[in-house]
Amino acid sequence: MDKVFCYYRVGRRFEQTLDLGFPLGKVISAETVGTVIPQEQVMWWKDEKE
Image (cartoon, rainbow, N blue to C red; front, top):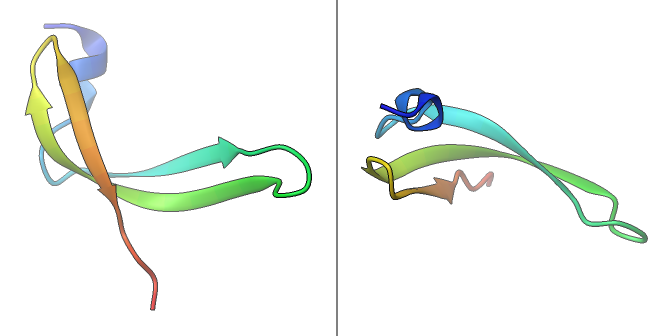
């Protein structure tokens, strides 16, 4: 199995950094893996902070 897909498992959490450029800068958010289809796709959702 591809090393990238081995890392992602449903329920696993990771930190995502998006560099949106000026004037927004970097946005860092916690994400949770929701669906993994091996060798095809990984889907995740953002953990909302309230």
